[in-house]
Image (cartoon, rainbow over all chains, first blue to last red; front, side):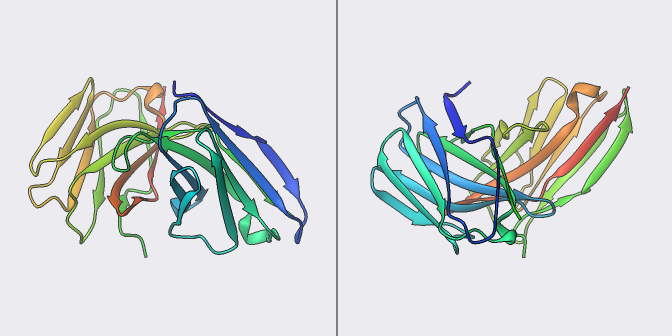
Length: 112
Length: 108
């Protein structure tokens, strides 16, 4: 299994609070991705990174920001969480942009 | 609007039955991937199909890429309870786009 961990695995927070999710990899892959998964929508890309300090927006980036200061870490921040951001968040990594993606175990976030 | 339409959305069958799930789009794909996701885990890649008309087999799973590279199917022969999961198709559209998936339940 690819070495990807996500923290926390579960979080409950209140509307308006900031939240940061962490993805850590030990594979030295160049590309890292953040997705959210909701019933009926499948996986939707939030942001991705193609190198340290190099990031770009995905399909559903509004309300989210990311940072990548080291190859191994990719952080997803919700500056002011809303109930619509209740979801399961997955991090993924890949060696090349169109190559197989390896997914982390997911973080279940509930915004009350 | 989903770029990828997967059908059926849900499928519940008995162990030993055969099944086919579909992934369709109006777009032409350079390649398409199939993933399987078990409850509480992230998706895991099963196969990538690249050539129109291509057929790939993975044990009891047969993947086909349409001649026009707009659709794909996954056929499972003699399904087993261990095949239970969410089957997702995905393609690279400058960023990776996933279908909503087919949730398969195989009852013993």
